[in-house]
Image 1 (tube, chains in turn blue, green):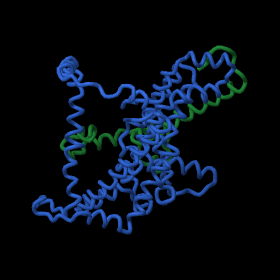
Image 2 (tube, chains in turn green, cyan):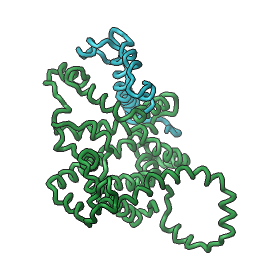
Image 3 (cartoon, chains in turn cyan, yellow):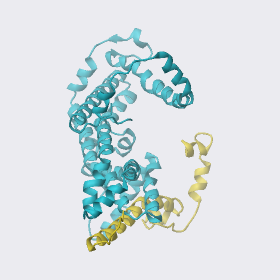
Length: 319
Length: 82
């Protein structure tokens, strides 16, 4: 992920290609290429190669007959998805969950990194930082079972606190209106510490002389944050934001699927769980592929839109 | 980020607030994990009564014994590392 200013790109222009030199350079860096080879293989094998099978979306695909035995039906499955009664509900659920997460879970690591940055460097800071990474390493199944434990009306701590304060106990997972808050709050809990790493590394790149100069000019700590720290990590924030916008239509499948139950299905059915149920459970591969492809295309449009907007207004972009 | 100069009262209050907040956050990060660990090491009746929080009640390793006998994939470590 390289951040390049548009101006710099223009200045460099198109270099003249000297094949001999290029080959010599590749040979000189051969170990670097060797190191990146597994990643390239991974992407080709698991991300680009499977794209050939996106054709399934345009066929009435029968898995035993292959493409030869299946009928080409054009955009039928796209149409039937868009016209299905679930369509708006699923898109809305996915989008709403992501917008909430963009509003609350996206700024959380930034705020956390800023607060950590204000702590005096030392053991305390390091301990807090290390502990904050912990939830990231727990597998999703474990996290969801923890959520179920903690929110349980009989053994959960949340309900026992509420009982002590004289409130009625609530079965949080049994009511649709609590689904989104639980998803967002647990998402923040899981990823806040881990997400703050990238901002902390950006923070450490800020020239300390700037702070000294600001102190000389009589800036308090709050003003230092506003005028030095935040502009210093603005690039990182924007790049993360662009990447985040690219995933506005996809929700991590595992967590939603594990949290899903009959009570909250009206708000918890998202694109990825729909694809899974249609494709894997109902064996309707073509429709599932069409939905997945639709999702991918919209995501691509969103991320390029965010990228070009950012290039236009802030001169920061991914490519 | 204390660079030069004395801290004002507001800054001191902020420092205290920040440290308290960080302590609370650390608790929030740790509690669910410790809670699960404590539950796994407790006998089942205190768990069902909701008495287990940070520390195991009536400690036992029975759950782990049962777990080690699970033989779905031939070897319980498969579950551990999958």
